[in-house]
Amino acid sequence: MSISADDGWLDGDSGRLIRPYAVTNGRTSTNLRLDLLSMVVATGAGSHGSLEPDHVQALGLCLRPASVAEIAARLRLPAAVTKVLLSDLVDCGAVRAAPPQPASDMSNRVLLERLLDGLQRRL
Image (cartoon, rainbow, N blue to C red; front, side, top):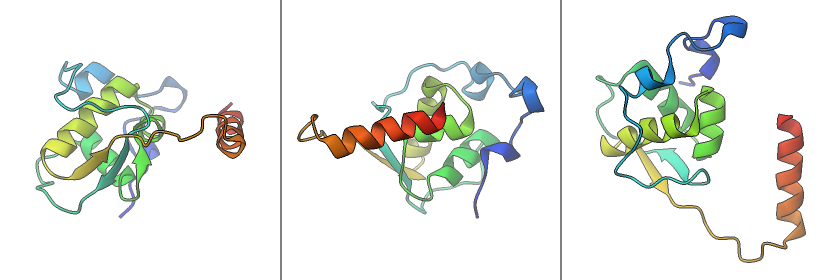
């Protein structure tokens, strides 16, 4: 089952019908430290019956490993809101998060070219 961010509460050019603070019930911080480059993947465990629609959407994007930044972009939500949603999913056992792996050589040309290519595609 694949859940697309476009299936959600979007109204064309107007954007989301539900404001981000409503998605998180006003919460802005989490117990879990997530970085934008943290990798998140669904575990296949946990109770999903009581999840809110945004949680279900985020979970659908975690069927394959994805970064917090990628999930936020696909959900069309601010990173802080996405971190709250993902933290909730980690708490209920639906996803597992791993901190980003440090780059051994930041001057790695291949890594920098991939980064530049990805940024250019987004613009």
